Length: 289
Image (cartoon, rainbow, N blue to C red; front, side):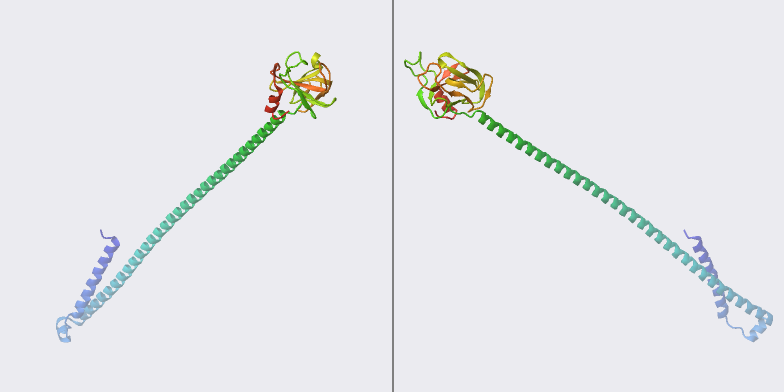
């Protein structure tokens, strides 16, 4: 479908061509000689004909100029319209590009924020894990120290000593003879009068009294229920209910009770009543009488 402006251009062009053709035809027509002109047209007619031809030529020239102006104006308008369309398209493209750029920037910022958040969370988790590991290590170290301290304490509490010093053994467990009503029930450590007699293990004093043939006797009950007995002493250094450590003095070498010389009669009673040989018992606990 032709545009209206284009149709006007064609009409104007057609008219201009027609006028030009008429002018050209008039110009190309055989010149009429004065004689022939005079024979066919009078001067007034000839002048009128010439004026008409000139007018048609001028009209054709004006129409051509108008057509050219109209065509130029149309072309200019078309070019301006195309330029406006191109500018509009470029503006739309620029706007689209700006939108894409903005979206990319927002997406990048969001990605960076997410990455930073994850990194912060990872750092926090690592710090928490490190703190937990340090706390665990500290707790384990403390528990180990406590266990070692407990072991040392237990070892110290079970540390054993001999009943006295500067002694020599004068009678052994199960030994018979006229000195005793039955076989000997303990181990005799002979030493000078007044030599300290000590508890062989930590424990509680459950007896400190004169006990007939045993003379002045002290009994100490230990943590495993074993009772150790110290007899024939010259004096007491403890009272019933006292808590003693290994090596605590409970009395002194004497000759009280049934005895032929200064010594301490040492007995070991498992469970508080079963008399056993003190020598292997002392060796089992780390000392050699």
